[in-house]
Length: 246
Image (cartoon, rainbow, N blue to C red; front, top):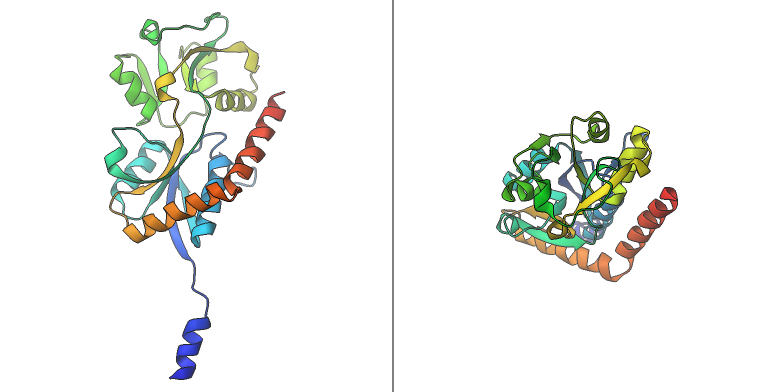
């Protein structure tokens, strides 16, 4: 009996696999050249899971499906999700990471000056990610010509071909899409800042998730925030992006 108890106490605890859902969104979740998933927030999630002692099984899917999966499936983690008042009761929120301002963008030749009024843009065709916080926000403000999409790969080409008037993104996401599409970033212009949407990106669990699991991940997020791990990931990614753009 003593030998059995001794073996039990010294054998390592096997790491659990955590189900995680997300979408592709530069620079937060990106597809690497080898097909693996990278990006700023992906590295944050890996650091978080490592701190918590789990192995993440991350599945990439259209945002609407990722959101619905996390909304309805116990113990599923989702990132990067905006913590809004409407969403607040439906998730266990783990932590937030600072992000860049969000703008509506158009072709510079069509929008030579930045607008100070969102309401003056209601007539334009705006591409939005299906089920996104931006889509809900613009619909709430009576934008009646929204173009919901599941994927954003062709947004700038659609803009160039006059199939859209405006697209949504941070300066970093639009720069990356322009680079990927072979477009000159300088042909694009910020039309208006969506100041009410300038919020942090969050990591969250399904609301019915195990309270001990949620508490463990909140503690893990607090640890990587205080020990410099999170700051190091931020510096690595955003110093690189600013260098690449110039």
